[in-house]
Length: 463
Image (tube, rainbow, N blue to C red; front, side, top):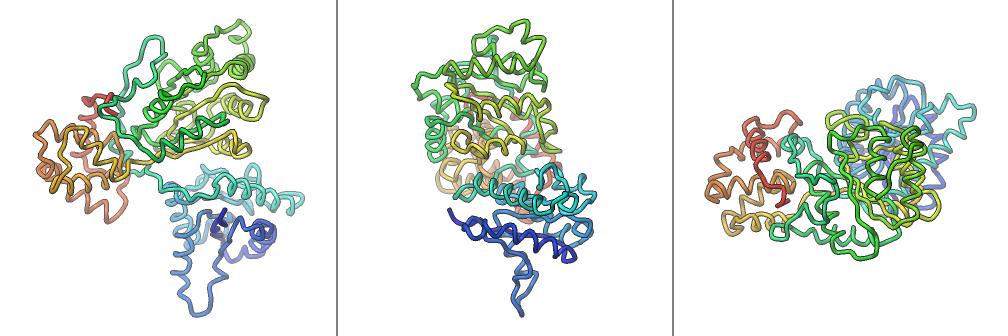
């Protein structure tokens, strides 16, 4: 595994603590796990601002050494931290706040992230500061292990795309909530994501107990999993629970009871009285019977929302469910969750058992897959049309739901791609998007309204 490039952002007046941290990170550096960089490494005569920018852009992990001076520093807070958080949100770097001194950081942009040392207790407040720095080093070691040797691809969850999928298509539900495998997709319009499908198929057929598929609304998480599961014949009984309905609240008693019923078990009186007993009952069922359980929209039992981001579970029993499933004894079942985000506490639990836990961040369609989607929707992908369709795909970062909406509109209006492009004013939108990131609510109102209207009429079976 190649050493992870590590950028250390700190205020110079905190240099003594920074140097102490570097000492405790030496074993990680010596083992070839990390390659730390901080601005004292800038050579004489170099342009320091450009050196910092280049190192920050190349970093795979960014440590924010949080103190009152760090928060007060315009360069640390407004430039380094802001850019680091942009890269974290894009999925191209992992940001880790390291709380060195007591400071008012709880309302900062990085407050939603899991901080080190344990519980965000400032290093200087520990009885033994060496123990605090050891906790930081061990936490960083776990992060490096969870990232593995493969550099993460840029995440697709951009504000522009989230804006146009605020209103999501509600798929029809069966009354018994036991939908058949493959109900979400149709072969005639399905676009195969070859690489990610092969990767996920391998994970699902392995000893993995919990697979988390993460991506924004409409990216195709549920359809992809059901497509893969439909081809499997390994003796596991498939069941699915969708938390994105008004039937379930965030508490474990609600969703856990529904899941237990999906597995063919009825609640006992003890289950109804004590959610902890329900948890034991559910885990016993999963351990002794071979199920493949798909839990969709896990974000519905997390605190937060799309605007504020999701944090921890609303009910700690949900975390206990996954933790015991992963760390307990033998288990005959496999659980696959889809979600728009995962809480840091679940990622931490999973990172401790990498053979039993896997996470895949689902991105948009590739260029070829985008053209295949347009073709299957009935559009010509040749000559001039291809040029505009490729630009459209790039603008919406390969998001399949949005592109399917656009394709349906184009087909309905005669299939003239160039005319559709001009009528929607995409030239202006393309220029704006290329010049600067589009804020979630700064999206062109007319285009946003058009997409929302189309979402209501687009058949979900083609997605």
